[in-house]
Image (cartoon, rainbow, N blue to C red; front, side, top):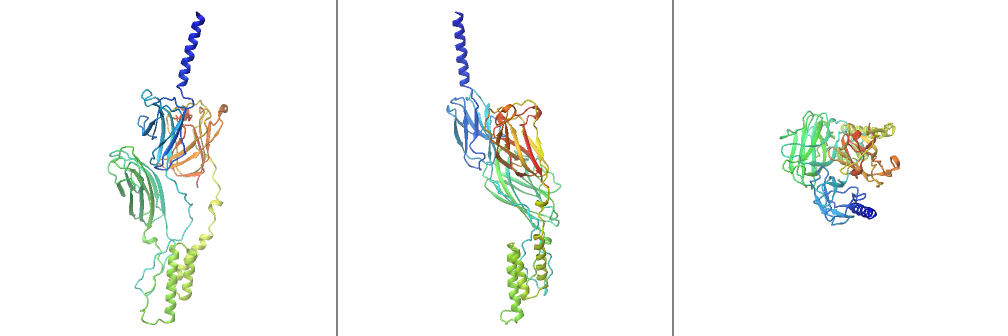
Amino acid sequence: MRTVRRKSLFLSVFILTAFILSHVPSEAAVRPLKQSYAPDEPIEIVYDNLPGSQTDWISLAPRENADDRYGEWFYTGGMRSGSHTFGGLPAGVYEARVYHDWPTGGYVVQERAAVFVQEAVPEQSGPVPAEIPPAMRPTPRPEPHPSPVPEPVEITWSASGQGTLFAPGQGVHNYRIHELDARRFLNGGTLIVDVRIGAGQSWASVDLYGDGQSLATSGVPQALASAWDLPPNSNRRITHTFRKGQIFRLCFEGNWGSPQGATNTYTYSATIKPAPEHEPQLPPLPERETPHVAPPENAVNRRAAETLWRQAVSFQQQKRYEEALAKYREGLALSEDPAVAHHADAMETCLLRLSTLPDIAATRPEAAEIDIFNNWNKTAVVNNPAGPPSPTRFTISRPHAITYINTYHYFNNGTPAGSITLVHQDGTLYGPWPATGRSGQGGVQNAIWEATPQTTLKAGTYTVFDSHPSTWSHNAQSDLRGFALVKGRLLQ
């Protein structure tokens, strides 16, 4: 009898264990098919090893949304593995979230993976040490002799950027800030900013602040210039004339009429038209003689010289400086003009200086690689299906060249490495960069994810995003932030 009872008990335990194991996912995972997507591009995600309930479901939502606030979603219909394509979204950071067995499982997220949507970032050329500016068109004057002109060097400036804005709610502000450094324009000028709003849900508002102005946190902002309530897919130009050089702050946010938390993308380009004191002028050309009178030989030469000087002006406007200088000299050979000669001499001096500038980048010693952020420690680690409880953030006060990033995944069961991304406080995305896996403590495969971005980061606060947060290791000593190491070099 005891033998029968033991067999029955063993059989019951075996059946119960088999039932439980059949309903527990093994290495469940969800991931985007691509490292990043363009705005409005369909987003395909892949899922594996789900329990197999007809009401398992997966959603795609903004990362900042609570787990019970979901966007587009679908039932898996009992499929344990498969893929699904979601509709396109505006630029931003999102999460693919896996929920089990609705309604029994509630809004408990079992697996999540970061999904990045970002605009293509154009390559930016390096700084130019000096430049001869476009020439002004000659202006006829009544005086018989031309006025002297300054050396043909004009201060030129431009800036551009992009980001993601968020609707802050009625009456408050949550700016995404871009600094525009116009301190070199000592005598002032006119700042011209062209803004383009993306196709997202939120409408946009833009405010321009100057030196010494406090950014508004609530109420109507007292900015230098503003453009409010810009609808999606719209363009707007903002201008502001200033008397002295300063650092402006260009601030973007969602308008008060948009739902709180709604997002959109934006881009901007800015230029400065210097005050007249900065604008060189070519010597004016004298009035033509009456065409009915046969001109003497020197007048014919003068006209030919004027024609050549006009061609020189055109070449200078196109920044074809050597050709412009040749035309100035060719005209002077036909007709003397002290002002034109002075202008040509100044241009030649400037071109000579440009050609003899040393290669600063080649002669300057490279800064040493340093740890910009490192919260690794030797205490036991844990992981959380929802990811590390605290965001992994660091701040740099000056631009750095980022050379290396890693994250730690001790309990990932050897899952291949994914990607790592940095997001600036203004919403600008850097990456995602594909990572390679390296063995960690105890020989755990792919425990350390490593990436070598080799990119430049501007000053500001950055958040580190990992494509598989559910296995991202953390502990109390890391301030409940995911283990990460960021290395780079300070730019001089």
